[in-house]
Image: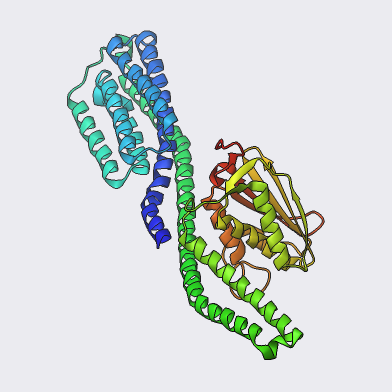
Length: 443
């Protein structure tokens, strides 16, 4: 139930996170577009004022690109500390660009300026980047500003030579504006679409993970329920076997006593497994922890597994730092058990386990000399019920391993060896294992 609660609390965050992460990339695109706009405005103002002899209010018009530069620098400073940008922030940034364009148009002829069609660029970007209400707000703002500029603007005083070819100048300016809008739309809309596609892919991946976690929760509830159900008959079997062992008629027969002892070992093994299931499903990480050397912890796991699988030769090499201690979590033990079990089923005579450290990562590599993974299995690594064993319900081992490793911030990779067999690599971040040095310093 605790896992169900955590997943239900996490889902709203997962739904919003991809959109806001894509918003950060789109904000960077708006910043780039604003750099282009500021540079273009400066270039155009200087050409028109000094090259064409059309007098413009230079001091006032220079304020807009300076303000745009300041906004860009401030936005970049904020984005360095943040990974998400909300829709409202994108809306305000786009509204600033609309207002800046309006000011420049007001000071350079208003609606008679052919560059008034740059409003369409803002409308298209708003339709792509913003939610429906914000996009319509941009449409309303640009429409109102365009109407105002048709009535109120700073009239341009043209030299006589230019006044005679005013229509031709307007046509040339309209063509330049059209070409500029077309180029910018292709460049930036293409990049925005890539951001949105990446967001959708991330969202689909998160939904898949949520579905897989739901699947794990259901299996965990079923497993814990079955463990409770099986606990009573196993206890009864243990009592009955103990009574049989003490019966004089059976005690006189060494062969039967040996079989009873084997059954007692098997029952005890089943009870240990059920206890591990209940502990893993009911005890949160960090509750009643056991601190143990990382090397001793792994040595014990391999020894215990080898005893239970006496027919499998285990080539074991552990070069982990013996001075590092971890919080011994039953979940970690079960992860390693699952990987070893999978390897032994594919290669019942021999498997190998090597352990080493790579910086802040603990690496476990399990190899076998079985048939290896089919290409389709490698493509769907960790998907439930993907198995080469042909058993109903198979394929859950790596599925559980992958999801537990994901919770720990770790990584699972699988590949086929050059000489055959399969290789599964587990990478554990040491900080998630509660690692500390033997002198008590926590890493």
